[in-house]
Amino acid sequence: MSERYDTGMAVRRKVLGDAHVDAAEASRDELDAAFQGLITEGAWGTVWASDAIAPRERSMLTLALLAAMGNFDEIPMHIRACARTGASKRDVMEAFQHVAVYAGVPRANRAIKLAKATWAELEEQAKADE
Image 1 (tube, rainbow, N blue to C red):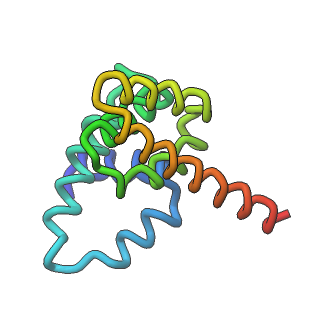
Image 2 (image 1 turned 135 degrees about the horizontal axis):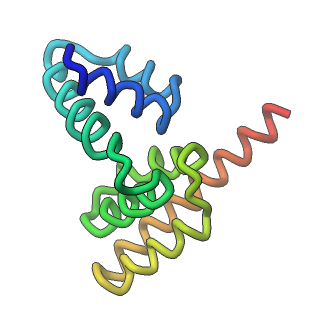
């Protein structure tokens, strides 16, 4: 593997957590191995590894872009990542307000519903872990 891949895997683990990455790696097969390498090097080893934008702001940008483009499947994963990047619920809601104004209320509304459901799941997990 390349240095960028190694960096990407380290950043991916830092942002998403070992459990998420381990599950993704366990499901990797020959059909998606090249794709997994691409996102590890490109998204995590290049974009997320850059120190030009702080992780908090990167989370806000990512969530806003996912919502604006209608890529809702990734939103819960990135909401969970906020615990590691420092983006607060208020930060996320501010990002989704931008989505509402610049990309459309229905997309922001769907993203908010997903965020609220994910936050509720996280709160339930926290209570169960006590």
